[in-house]
Image 1 (cartoon, rainbow, N blue to C red):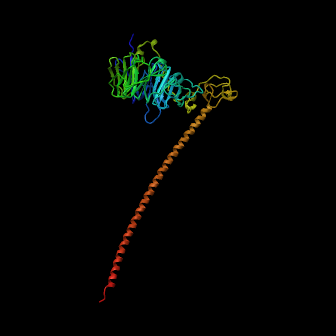
Image 2 (image 1 turned 30 degrees about the vertical axis):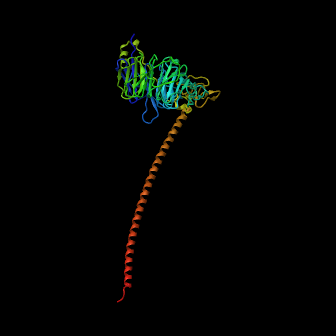
Image 3 (image 1 turned 180 degrees about the vertical axis):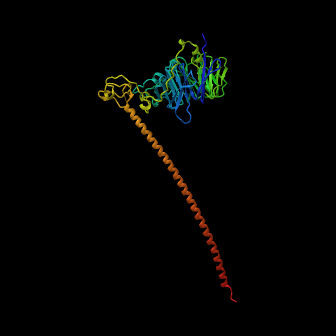
Length: 531
């Protein structure tokens, strides 16, 4: 039996290629087109595609999700999103893609169609981590608000239950709502945990589905281990530095915690003791030293021995956890490594995929997998539960010709003709409604026309507002110029008046002095005796 070949995929937080290495030999197999990824924003979508959440530039609040095929280095699908998306998680079969937004919302897309199935406000601050159980039954989200939510994935991707409101916020291990978060009606987390004191930096899910354990790390220097079956906290460990990544070996004997100082701390686990929440100060037994900056991700290989670590020092390292020695270092990354994957080597990975396809017989060649569709920005208001959503926020779907039927035609006449857009049908001689109707709830032609007119009016209004703003700006500049000219004229006039006053005062003083001298001389003449 041939040994399993694995690859290491790493993306950086700056604009640089996504690198793919062979785990065993350390050779660089491929470089995908440059991308700047959010932390934990890299996930595999089935066996044929990989998705990366794109960092936004400048002050724009919008984001994007890029999808690559292993067959080519260029981006296969680029999907702009309504907000910047951070962490990503996909089901094992690549059918569903989950993303966490900077606003605290969690999104669930159907990859094949790009349809946004559900979005709800799970957190009050940005989502930092997403994790799926190995059976794709549970979705775990964590954020900067130090809260962890465990939600059944079928709830997040199904229609909301009518009349169900978000429950009150719960502390500790609670079954209830998301604390009254916006848009949480119909999406009720199975558990809500609030034991962390600061932002949660990493989530790691063990094997076992709903009976597995969950590891969470935080900036509060702690790692906590949770039971998904009991919904309870099993253990809590404190470390000397903030923990930025966490993982356990596949046998769940040792906890590996990546610190902000670049060290990977090892802690032996002992679950034979009574479950509790006691904090064990300085709980680490040893450390793997090699990175010079904060650890960003930890992943184990399938052999349960090799540990792969990524760091902000622009390197990826492979460790032997038995001998605790460094095996190899990957230095091809052009910036701080923000996310990491270790997965079986894709059979379609280029350029080897082209060679294998050309040498294989025609009967054995498999057709290329179709790329996923671009992800939708918005969903119907009924599907999202968001109060601010409107039906026309998503592009209308124009169905092809539909066979005629009773009560569904134009003007109530029998059916929709070939090539026409369905319009609201008639039930009992009355129209069903203005916004929706026809087949499968399509938009009517009247609504589309009215929307076009309103859009043009809005654009005209915006143009008038911009012109008015420009005129006001010109008027303000003109008034400022007039004020400056007035101040200059006043100052010059005052200077002239002051100069004339000083001249007159000087002349008057001289005349007074000469007159006084003449008067004194006449007095002396009168007082002199006559001889």
